[in-house]
Image: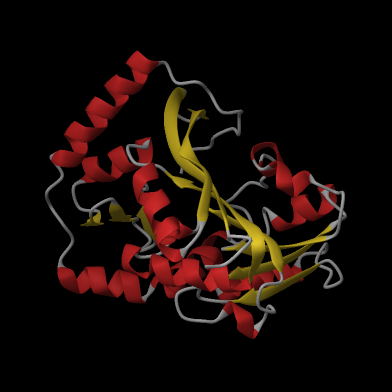
Length: 277
């Protein structure tokens, strides 16, 4: 994976963006070779297993700490009152521990469907159950209310986690989150956007496509790419109000190849209604 630096979002020049999208559409349209049905089913059924193997290989060394989240989601920096947050897809704690250090008013529940990742969170020297609680949970199967009281969470972060969930199971995961959010509670969402450079790379390989906008990596983990219309629809269908839903553009640097890469992420902020219908 390319080593990249976390920089502030950039304003993409319209002409440059149009050329990027035109190139992406051409590559994606020409990618007609899909993975056989047997393997598609296998990758989807073994998602948790493949992520567990990922963390076995990479331990805590793969992802960088996420110090940008309170810049993008101001609610995470608010210290005016005690709040409870849930991070779904917590990995090895790259969001949890920096956020706890920056905001003493937050208590964070953290879940992942990889037991190995959760064990690494618990083994971290900064893990303190007075401030956080990590647990194993497959959002598409396990009820969050088995661990978290219903309607008790103020904020949920979903950062590059829904892309690992098969599209047909996303509504189950969203409804699961809905059940533990307080009325007025919010989901802070960021994930891969359609026409991102990573999607172009997948399509150029011609043997990674599982379905529309869904691909498989060499290690068996999956990646889905969201359009903002798709993202809006998924959360509106479950009952969320859309506060924000748009694309974020970033320029990252591949130090090995010494090139700049244009990244496109889908970012949203979704709120559970204060008055339920």
